[in-house]
Length: 372
Image (cartoon, rainbow, N blue to C red; front, side):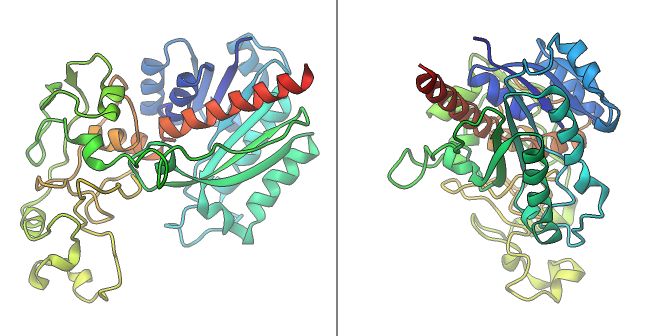
């Protein structure tokens, strides 16, 4: 039986791509971000993109676009915008309008009545309102017949070369047992995928270089590169932001694994000259080949975190950020470079999405065996 999915707050479609890897047919995606919508359309040609704010999206429009009737959808997935829940937002409150967008997701759930639901968000959702957002999600889903469990998943445990924590809610209206995917990578398992595994085959770039599609620097030298490259011979979206001369001078002092602490004090930004040595631990960080990336954000800005290339004096490119998020190289991002970084940073890593999809398959199989 065909397993179908609809992706709300889909962005460029990272979660959709992961579900497709796991054998799901993605029928539609919705998002307000136009550049992400163009990317979604290009990378999910068999799905319908439904543009605009979710507040304006009717259940009837979704059913008309997908040909589904109520209770026919296998899984509805989505990640309401995370800014209100993020640990970087120190004004977290249930009064923030973005913190209530999950209720729009619940409205669509109630209208479509999918068999399963998956919601993804940042761990900061536990802090908002003293856990009120998490309780509201579970209580409101329970009120319409869905049992839900949530768990913090670590992207690196599923083959993503990045330290990334996300809360994943899984639920169903069928009364079936709920669990989350077990790690596949880490101590005693397949080794973590390193930054070297992720990006070492990409061609070198100068600061600010954007020369279009380029040939790879080498043959793929690990399974991760083979998986993400597929049969491509050139790589796109491999462009780096242009940093000013002062930042290039600062980077010359930072070794692999180093940070702002390695920059001579006279070269530091004024605000950082007064910083404690314990502050800003990731700022002006240079990656190490054998390590994991820090969380890829919507700006791979060297002022924000460890986004300096391991041995080139520049910030990582859009494609390098996408590799660290586990996007395949055929996944081309539309829009300006700034918009491309936003799409990459906001996405669910496709390999994490694949792990969730494959685990749902196991849950379906278990349910079928019980029914038999």
